[in-house]
Image (cartoon, rainbow, N blue to C red; front, side, top):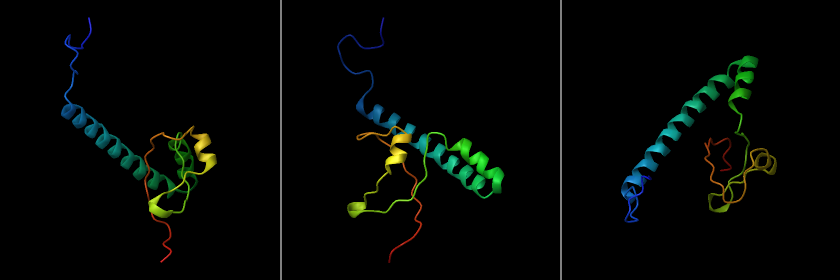
Length: 102
């Protein structure tokens, strides 16, 4: 027996699905903000901070890139290969301005 209705209608309404996706996105954002706070705390902690930083950075990368026309940024080849990121993949970025060319 399955949870799908017999008449072929979707189990969730589009509005319920959108709400669930929005909640999941908000939870992911909160988790990333907490991770970023931990990262900032670890990076200011001297050599002990670097060892913590290494453990936290598994599956992520940090690099500098230049904003191109239309607001585009590029992920360097080495990071794309290391993280197995391919065209069409969805990634999330935390943007911290480093230098302004104004």
